[in-house]
Image (cartoon, rainbow, N blue to C red; front, side, top):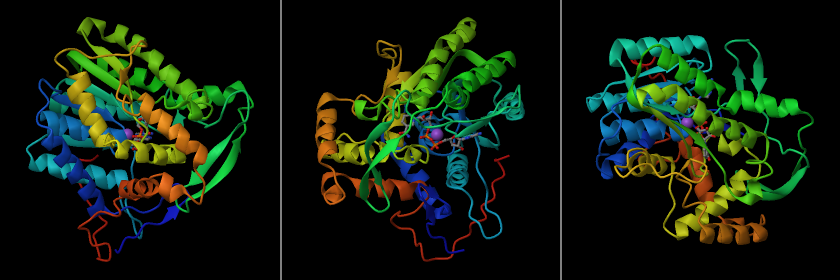
Length: 398
Ligand code: NAI
Ligand code: NA
């Protein structure tokens, strides 16, 4: 099949297997170039392991620390006339590279929110690894079916209290426009969003893993959060999704109690704003990211998911001098994004940005590049006119 990008809004309906493989290879090369992580993780479970921060975490553990990895994700393999999803191709490519390097890697494709997938994962750990020493929780989903009640929750991205008006960009066309997002109408919107993106499922995972005896002495667990600048507070940190992130962050102390007798510990890491399938769905944020990229690239401090996760592992989680935390007990790898000089320049550009000057003021070109890269497109050295085999079969993905 000759595979071209086919987009609908912020979604790309197609993905390119060879491009995705190139994406994975580039990330592996980056991690290798940074050298081995001293005393890094050895047996790792990554939940949400196929795209974005999750696959970057998996690559950092495997190629930075020779870790055996089990990945859990929700992706589709190719079917008649349809490509697989990007996360499927990423995972297939990762497993191939890991196996070639002599590293254990297996994956479970299914609904991580369900009891069944948790059970299957635990069986696989017991069978192959015995115990794990790191659990990375990197799920991002718009919905969750609760495993105990069967209730299906859908999250919303809305402000709380008052309508939010600001600029936004259609990153395909580069048109900057004003948008007003109406606030939640009831507490239910908050509760639903917390049910999907809050900490309960992370806690369920940790409880089940602990009860099964598959967590090693000194186990670490990490989940990802975001704060960002004041200009996105109404839609992000003070909005419905921010309430879910507060809930996720509060779950750290519950999990720490659970892990205490194993001398284990859990963290939330606040990561940088980056183009992923999840962040491109949030209004206003893509314009912020394209201005942020411009400023951070000019200062030589831009990072993608892989640079962020390699740094999280090497300089934070496995730093021999200890894990530095902010006043709320969180790991911060958004430190460069949040630097005062960076934020001041972004705020200045934010005021000025229009459709007419967007290409000049922002890195909308880099935004688009990253977006298409997520799906395996626009990589150098890949012949996108060539027929390619979309039917990638992988033994180690169940
Ligand atoms: P992503 O969309 O790239 O990755 C989501 C992952 O979750 C994929 O592996 C997907 O297969 C998996 N997944 C979704 N639903 C699932 C289900 N029901 N069962 C099993 N797997 C499922 O998202 P991204 O951006 O990497 O987000 C990961 C975490 O990082 C989230 O907590 C997000 O809030 C956080 N974060 C993201 C930032 C960003 O700018 N993208 C910034 C800071 C934090
Ligand atoms: Na992820």
